[in-house]
Image (cartoon, rainbow, N blue to C red; front, top):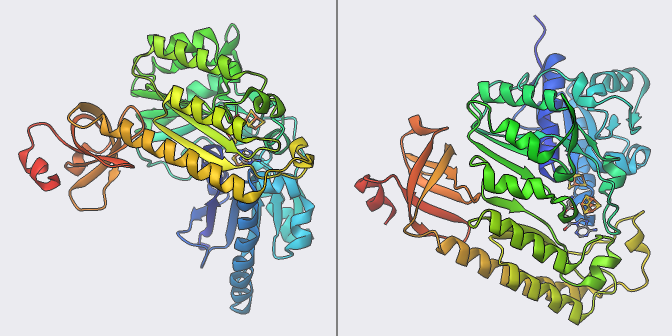
Length: 456
Ligand code: SAH
Ligand code: SF4
Ligand code: F3S
């Protein structure tokens, strides 16, 4: 029997890329590929790339440089190492990638992963292949079932339900790299969720670039995300639901009500606002005002008082003044975030804001980012500190660093380290939080004095 081919997939960027990498592995498993632990010794390396900020795209070219050396070494040993670039850099740069990096065999955009075997075959016979069209068919309809590559998985999983973006924020490449908003049909999502539940998944995170813009074909017309969530909440085995990333404009009444009505929907929401200044929000084409966002947060908290919020922020957007930035600081103080991501504005080729004449100097961006991150860190610490002494349900996901220790997640997505037997992996257990660090919590199973001593 021929030796199995090995593929190493390296993932950059957002959770949708993580999900896609898993699905590419499923597609390649059907072609006889097994997962490799490292690029060394692999027959194929797939870089699933991100284009969101300048640094993200640069990383890809330096990685290709390293792989080129491996490829040359493989060749002198009489082997072949093929390199494929997938993801958002593939979509944005297309044929430029093979022009700049001739070691690359194939370039495949995010909507063409089901065609990966055919693209690789084309590259094998005809030299570098580039596929960055947006094909009319849904890639997921033409893939083997989820779990084909790795039927054993941990208790949490991502499930992409929506892709693409029609919002065109003036700083962002996603509408160009992922294409127009499209939602998967309800039946396909339910089928995939059932399969994941059968594989041991207890917590599902529904993904979409604009997940709350979900409008998928249901048995009786288009369904909203709220309806989809309530359908999935009824699936046996799925105990926890999350969704990400949401846009404030699509935070509909029924979705807010879902936070009140669905116990299985976790009390944690990533709801990026980017800026607290109306002027900047307008220049970003976010199409909502600061107050609209604050009102949504109030309604969410009225529906689910223990809801914790997470957000994304950009500092130094072109034209951002000190006073605009202070508006962002004040918004953060008003909302109070449990967690957040913040970035310096990074001009992206082809986006409207990149052409602005009013770029903010780098040192100003750096200073604003440092101030914002201090405030956000403080809020995160305070949020975590508030957990000390409480007992919270934790989904135990994986082994911890120390033997006898497991790591899980609280409903608010905090990592919790706890001494617990491996038999509890995949279970949701009550854990008493003994100590709160800034990035993770330390807990003990109630009644387990040994555990408490070990932690203390
Ligand atoms: N769809 C999501 C965001 C996807 S991109 C939303 O609308 O919120 C993830 C985050 O990257 C964004 O929320 C934004 O904060 C950041 N980002 C996107 N483009 C950027 C750029 N050009 N410079 C800096 N940060 C950027
Ligand atoms: Fe980018 Fe805006 Fe679309 Fe989010 S909503 S993906 S930030 S264009
Ligand atoms: Fe990056 Fe593309 Fe996701 S640009 S953030 S990988 S949608």
